[in-house]
Length: 443
Ligand SMILES: [Fe+2]
Ligand SMILES: [Fe+2]
Image (cartoon, rainbow, N blue to C red; front, side, top):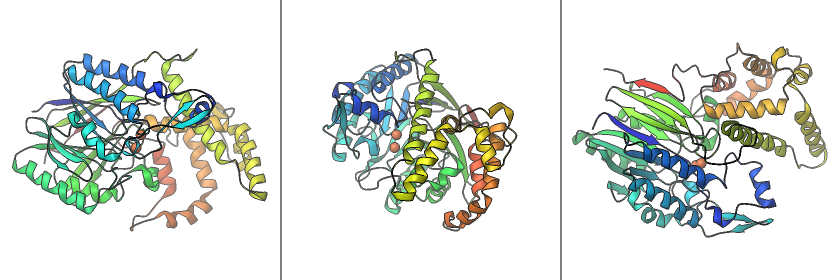
């Protein structure tokens, strides 16, 4: 039934707070975490209340990482919220992912991390039966990939690329053959198919093509396969980033990947999608204020601060450890990086830094650029002070970049690292990562 509209919510990473989320071990763990673990249940609750209140949209898609780390109590808590949302009149379709069964389930009590009961992959289908599997026209038993009718003549292909049998972004030839049967069936029945998958299919920003866990394995093959079989849109998550990307197969068929950020930490977004047969309109919303105490910051600043600090802590912690000369070098590097300003950094490398950002600390700059990438719509062209400085650094290290590039090239796809990095900090795609109107080609 066209027009069709639905909400997209992903990576809810729901954690049941009564398991324990406080103490020294918890604070230490949270130093490097992007999102709010203790507050995740309140954020999910507040968001679902918002969705329930919108009576104009009756469908919600959730592509995976439903729980923090597969704690059975977190699944039970999340299911209670799903039930309330369903009772408000919504049809909900989920897929599960690695964080729903495969991770070490733990809670934090006092100064200790304690192991808590996890969830075997084998019971996920039963747990989430009311949210896709029992409505499905077909289910691939080994991966829990399924096809369901979400509106008359509209089907959802919910691809599970992160199950026990095909972990971490795998869509292998066996699963592809199963999907082909479903797509042929849909075509025969005159149905439009939208796809959903946990891992981004297309790297969210160009440089993520070099990061193994950032997109589907062999993503060009899957993208071409889906596009050539009539799928025009896939809705994804996993990378906790807002991005929209397009890919054109060798046969000239186009597919868009709409990747939505993590709900419970910066950039903390969910989306509304409307398809009218000719165009897809994507609108993004901030997760609602869930009652957390942001101190003297706005809720948005509080979320972004948390993420920026986590990035900075990861960078600085990477400079811990080592032995002998390596340890000394790392320690010196850490001291420089934690204190140096961009102006000082520029002087070290003999590059000019615009006055407006000279006093910004290097480590804050790194954290803020990281946060900005995940928000999508990166503004840093080489005309901006930030873009200029990054371009100059890349130029300064061109001799290293040139050596590294051939090693990064795979399957005959050449890598231009400078271009990749500069296109990762500046959105020049011609459409927004957050609020976009995607017109389908008429031919
Ligand atoms: Fe996630
Ligand atoms: Fe994930």
